[in-house]
Image (cartoon, rainbow, N blue to C red):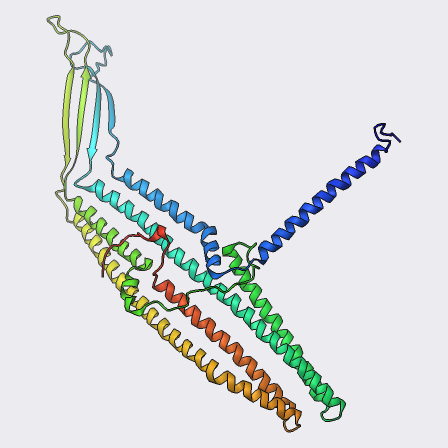
Amino acid sequence: MVLDVNNGIPSIYRRYHRGAIRFSQFLLLLLLFTGWFAVATDKPLTLQQATDLALKNDAGLEHLQLAEASANEQSVAAGQLPDPVVKLGLLNLPTDTFALDQEPMTQFRIGLIQQFPPGNTLGIRSEQVYLKGQVNRLLRVDRYLQIRRDVQHLWLEIDFWQQNQSVLNEDRALFEQLIEVTQSLYGVGRVNQQDVLSAELELSRLRDRVLTAQMRELEFRAQLGRWIGFENKLRPLKHAADDWTIPAADHMESALLTHPQIRLQDLEIDSSGKQLELAQQEYKPQWSAEIGYGRRDGENPDGSSRPDFLSAAVSIQLPLFTGKRQDKKTRAAQLTQEAARYQRQDLLLGLKAQVDLEIQRERKFRQRASHFQREIIPMAHAQSVASRNSYRADTAPFADLVRAALQVQQLRLELLNIVRQQRQTIVRLQYLLPQKLPDQFSDFPHTTDE
């Protein structure tokens, strides 16, 4: 064994000691990291934070933003003249000698041709491509609203199943007390063993309902993880001052007119209008200009050098026979624009009907929730207390006691479901009647009005 003369400790032990130190340092860092991750995971998540995370992580919004920028660049290119054409040629070359200076008409010619589309074709094409970019912009607004709606739906579902578990866990303590009561009464011979078994069975079924609620919560958390990141999906929920007020109905018409789906139809009408303008430009002549220079070699009979040639020409395409081409294109564009107007009208009527339905549903859910809180649940709770007292006095069967307790539980869960549906209705209305948009969407385009 080799000894280290510096400290007299065997080198193999020193290597083991250094390895142990490195392992302990790694273990400490791992514990610190996992502890930090656990703290980050346990940090409560509000509804607004969940929405912000989803919008920040969504790749679709970035895709549509880049597509809009791409269309804006293309719109500039679409408004430019086509590239000029350069012509090179050798004219009137004699085939007997192939000499460039033999014949006076032999020349080397270079020319430049520039085409000009008819009318304002270039400007209209540029506007068409720009409208395509605005379509992507509106799709981005609509995706923003959809993401906000879907995340709020998932957040409400998770919150509902968490409160569902809270109600069931509270009733677990009640059924455990029922088991103690029945056991004590069974011990003194006032009830039979069937009551004890029935109480234990109900407690077991209650535990199964808790497990079912936990499974449902995990399912919705997995769906929420797709939006906010799977590292955040298990964070506990935190109730903040969330806006659960219904959008003002008196502004329904104007709000619907600003909805991105209606704006998309407006852009469709504008785009078909540009197509109509483009078809009308084909009634105008298309022309092109050409300029050429011809160089000649050799001498004239008098000994003077031969002059070069300069030529210029203009070509015009005349739309003389328009019956089966220009007229048909124009009529087709008119019909397309008219169809887009009817499609917009149909969509607007459908959205109005949907908004009216959601408003009525929200009002009824709110009335039901108030009725449950003020009358139904207090009455059911009083009946449950009376059944419990009657059972202890041996004047009511155990089945009535269990039935009354389960009825209170079911009514409390039904109230949670009503509140969930009422808030989900508000979420759908906030999508249909957008009022608050981020700064990057505050100036999205206004087009055709109703």
